[in-house]
Figure: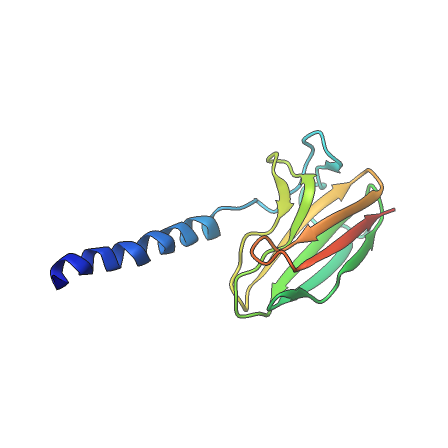
Length: 143
């Protein structure tokens, strides 16, 4: 009986682990661009003197900032620091990057940092969230 349960045991734990690894390894290149939405390519991906630098810290189930303001048409550099124990990301909902997907960091474990750069030409208010913990949310206002 035990010999039949052991393969099931591993299947139950290995399949979800493999899926979690695959999700964590996927993600964006961190560079934004145009895909018919409000974002345009960041100039060469390099920060310039006119770049707006933002640092957002994620702890377990909250961002340290829930309201951000940036200028329209200027490069924005967001550095996301995960200081929690769970995996988190920073996802700018509905603003497409160069790859045609929403601007987002990868899912990163606690103690890690990731940076994304983008330009949003269209003024407005955009939501950002952690895809794993939907209660982690905030607003990015582009003026």
